[in-house]
Image (cartoon, rainbow, N blue to C red):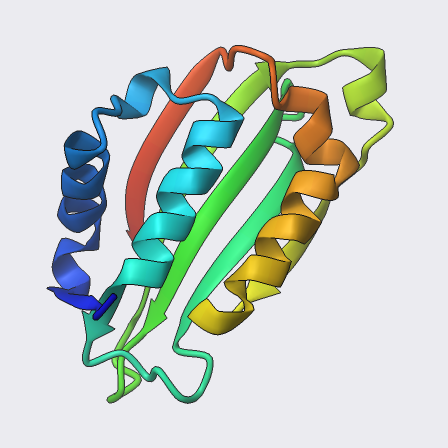
Length: 150
């Protein structure tokens, strides 16, 4: 399937359109839906003016405590670096869960993917991870999607 293109400044809008076309509501996502949505977006949509050949379009999987250490979070971040290096844009989809003793033991970590062709192995690693399995059937207490410019 040929990739669709989007402007980096409108990455959040592009992801929301993909979610809508899939019949998904961002605030109601669970981990399996969030992962599928982000992977579909990563595999099928390329960012205009991103450094595609030099890790300028990556997908990041993260897990661990939130900034206040009050909740366990999983996150999928699309990181886009412009060809002219003027800015790094991060589109972050974060699902938050209440702390449990088993989730606390998971600590924190991350995994990167920089090529849509490598996303199949990336997906297998994420789905096999203890962090993913710990929340795969849980209902998040909060789901946020936001864009950050670094």
